[in-house]
Image 1 (spheres, each protein chain N blue to C red):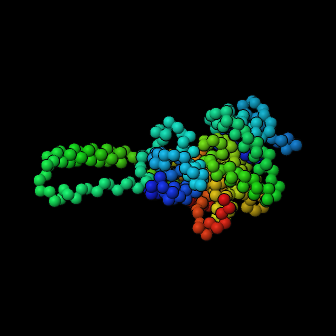
Image 2 (image 1 turned 30 degrees about the vertical axis):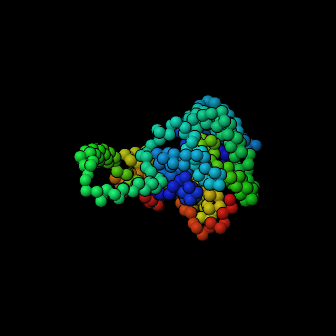
Amino acid sequence: MEKKLIADTAKYLGAAKVKVTADKNGKVLVEAGGEKTSGFVCGILTLVRSQNTSLEGSTPLQKCLTLDWLTYFATHLFHCSTHEALNSCLQHIDRELLSRTYLCCHRLTVADIVLFMALHPFITNWSFMQKEQYMNISRWCSSMQNDVVLKKTYKPIKFSRTCLYEGALCH
Amino acid sequence: MTQFGDLKTENGLKALNDYLGDRSYIEGFAPSQSDVSAFEDIGKLPSDKFFHVLRWYNQIASFGSEKSKLPGEKKAVTKSAPAPAAEDEDEDEDIDLFGSDDEEQDAEAARVREERLAAYAAKKSAKPGPIAKSQIMLDVKPWDDETDMKALEDCVRTVQMDGLVWGASKLQPLAYGINKLSILCTVEDAKVSVDDLTEKIEAFEDYVQSVDVAAFNKV
């Protein structure tokens, strides 16, 4: 999963000559422009710094939050063994998105892009009721999928609010 | 354009809160002047009861002084206050003391209106119409299981046309170890004909047996 996400992010950033491999312990190694880094978070950050620094965030606080989210993905979200674990991760993300438009301080960052790429296959299969349950993720996702670059590769997902499920809202 | 009523009242904020529940911005998927005008109408930080409005308010506030540079035209989202009622007494009075003054104002108003109309027409003619685009999923089938699928994909991607953008691709097993290549592309309807495109891909006879359109969506 991490290998694929790094490769997808590299494609998104337009980085050429990126090699992603995994060693026998399952740790990912990224080789870009002669520079070698190991681990998911460092790999993504090197790619961003070499291609589009604004996606890391412009203030120290934003950079910190980006790092924080990437670490959260790598330690929690990507290693959910059960459905319950995944749901509690999604609930956490949904709560965080309640008070902001993007994950880190009002601007699009690489954390948003990675999360979108990771969640897209799941959200495509969600029912409208599930989409309503994770209202804030749905809202975030529907604005993310209109990003110029993401629009080209990812199938658009349909979001619609149904009054039927209003009762199931858990805010 | 949606109307929310007076955003200074609870009801107006509630309507806006409902509206922003599944939207990040008031119009489309990027901040615009409509957001700014609604933002200015609210004026103060909304209470946290309206959490969607609060989220959106903070987002727009984060643009600071760059707000005026956001794209789009300013449009009023709130209902304009009813114009102060004209004084009825005028009708009864026979003597029009300010008659000449009124005419002058009318001429001035007409001139301003003319100018606005001209500016609007100029703007309208300069604006290009929306470009119709389609997203197409093509199924490319090879001759047999020994066909080099990587080379086949590279061949397909060499097809370059004005208004054609290649997207993601995937190999899908058909039968007996034979894979087909499913590839996404986005085309501008006016510039690219699908028949033309499939013919161009079928021209790689060494690799390609046939090309089918698996899905066709208007964007």
